[in-house]
Length: 395
Image (cartoon, rainbow, N blue to C red; front, side, top):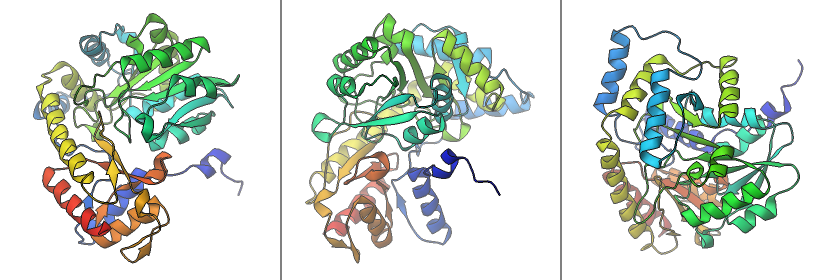
């Protein structure tokens, strides 16, 4: 048999999905596991949204829709962007996709040619690196250390630009760090993108989940130039607790939106009509549930940060957005914990899972070796017990 494509043969599976799969296997075997490795809200999808999906089924709204989604949903997304961030998009500039990850991949396929470079700040969400490669691009990873808030500076961005650079991939608020860029930081990055004529892919999936004094400044809202070069990514998965409904979207300049529409028409087509009906209710219906969930995450975040920074041998920065944080476990390297010699963060996560049945994701998966990611989209009771077990483990 002839070999697989080089890209397919070299793809790395998603580390977060691998953690989730392990947890499900352990639970199926009757073991109690406290999982903080995934990125899925523990809240149920709000009832009004579920009812909209049920009504769509009952009314026979179960056929194909246009490849980029229904006009009603695209118009509702445009209106939500206008209300939330002051952005002016027409419905034809909105592309509805099968989840945010799909929107990212399709945008990359429409923007990149073979060998084009994409500047990717690290730590980064696990799928960005491989999505760039799948689209034919070359990821250029630039590390933003904890000392600078896990945020890339304009000087770092400019230093990474080469004649082959075509796109800057920004995630704000950030996964896995919870970092949120200020307006001034974004303006400085936008100036570099203008100077070198770079496209920007701005993933703002966690834009509704910011805390303390942080403000989500949407990248295309910075200026007309930023608007003209940015593909904005968002969706319903995180803010509305709708991960399984698989609805993401891109908002883009008309030529890019048209290219994405054509790409979808020849690949997946539109997401399920039923999910689109539910998403229409999410965007156009009451928004108070989003704030209730945000306050719940905030309570967990504060407790988690206080507990972690009171433990000897681990620490964390204060996340300003999303529902993740990175725990610095470098002081634990070289120790023997749970009967295992801890050489790296992968050893740490494996030993913690085996000894205490607590699942987290190794930082190396996000290009953040020496850290582990803890997702606090879990109940406070689970977080308390998970932290108790972590503390016992490192003692």
